Amino acid sequence: MALRLPGGIIDHPMANPVQARQVVAELPDQDATMALEKIAEWLESLNQADGFKVDRRYECVDLLDGAARRHQQELTQEYLTTPRVQKFQENRLWNAAFGYYKELGEAYVRCIKECVGGFDGASAAERVLPAIVARALRALAMQLKWTLLRYGLVERRIWTHLALLYRFAEDKGLSEKAIGIYPVPHPKTTVKREFLKTLMLPASSLDGLTPVKQQIAERTVAHFAESFLLSTEAEGCTHSFDLAAPRPPARLVSGAAESGLLYFGAGKALAGLDRLTKQVAARGGVTHDYGLGTNYHKDEVIPVLRHLAQYWSDSPPARGSERRPTATRITVVPGADQVFGMLNPSATVSTGDFSGNPTAESWIVENVSDSGCGAIVPPQKIDWVKVGALIGMKSEISEYLGIGVIRRITRDAHQQRRVGIQVLTKTAVPITISKANTMSALNFDLREETAILLTVKPDARGEVEVLLREGIFNGRDGLEMTLQRRNYRLEPLRTLEAGDDFYWARFKVTQHAE
Image (cartoon, rainbow, N blue to C red; front, side, top):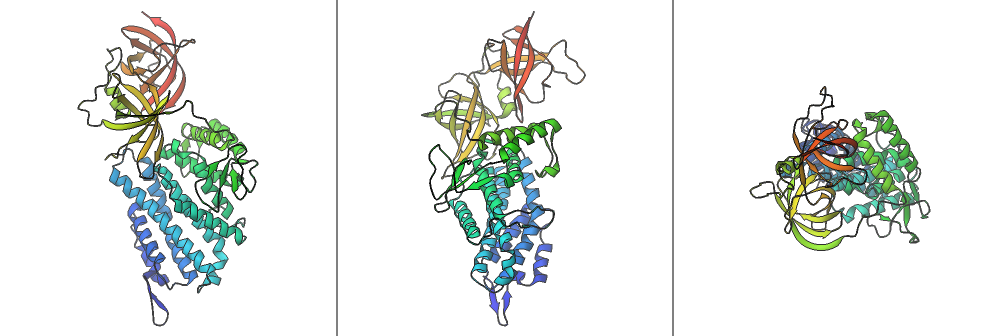
């Protein structure tokens, strides 16, 4: 706690503008994580310090907020692009980001409280009050974002503060006032827009996206925020939020509208999302000026835009089949290298020998359906579990190796991770693939490689699905498949999924090669 010394001087380093600038100048320049940790510490000390005039407190928070901007961007990039990060390092990155935004939000909330309370300097700070409220909302949105990046359970505090801030802005007539929340080149915004951006994140079902795709989704939400709809009437909306009893936004059920709730939805953004999807497909991707922070290829962006279009619509995707409760264990190995390394191409099916495999993990399956299962994941030193990860798996009662993909991750109130797994096949059929004679060797030189036949028999159209390692197939040229010592010609039809380390495609069996 800062002390007010005789003569009105506050015993806190940042009370003096010169010393405050010195604090910022001494921040670590080359270590984004350490810099954010230090900034969070200074914000915490400000939040605990009494005696500051409101305008001076805001100036200090603004100074630290500005100093953090480059570091938070660098830390986010590191968090999203570092594969198979050690758990302690992931914890440090996450805690630095989340801790910073939590202290920043509390700092702006204290500025608001003191401004409303008529503290010294309140009249000078009142001119920027709308921007302070918008910044507080944005800090809450970033706490929500980082919670979702870890597939965590959002603290009730976040919903409560979100409701309080918006109610305050409405009562003061500040919610729709255009403001420059940060200096140019940042575009103008409104409190209402910042509020809607925050609500649309959980409404976009981000637990079914990888962290990188969550980042694309979050920036897409920001891109379309001006077009979102907020109303006291349910018409045209897809979700509701209760300002009086804050909790996560709820999707509307037909005929379930209630008085006293706020309703929101994509509004005109849904049509804009469709136009953007077509533009990205035509251009081959998006560039830095789109607002994603970097350039992305269309194959990264379009699946996210389609995901958002589904969950922003009136009819979100329905579960394909009913889940049935169970209690059993499965042994799991991560990634294509492990999965393909367990295959014996000369065998009819793969039994999946997990004995002695140091990467094998035991998960508890709590429900099953015709197409997948839900499991509880124990904590591990290496945090490889992510949406889109390929896994090999074998239940206690199965003789054969199955193949699955993690589709959804959540955390419960006890911080246990739960995953939803799509089962591609319950019985991995190993095959050998090689370059077909008619293929060009100019840019594609595939010798014999092991792959997995996901459909044991061709369907009525003579089509099969095959799982291959990433990087061994160009998606265009035909292959020869060897199955049980017989050779078949495969012509590629379409890619079903291109994962980080695997390629799932549909082929037509066009001829039997003798």
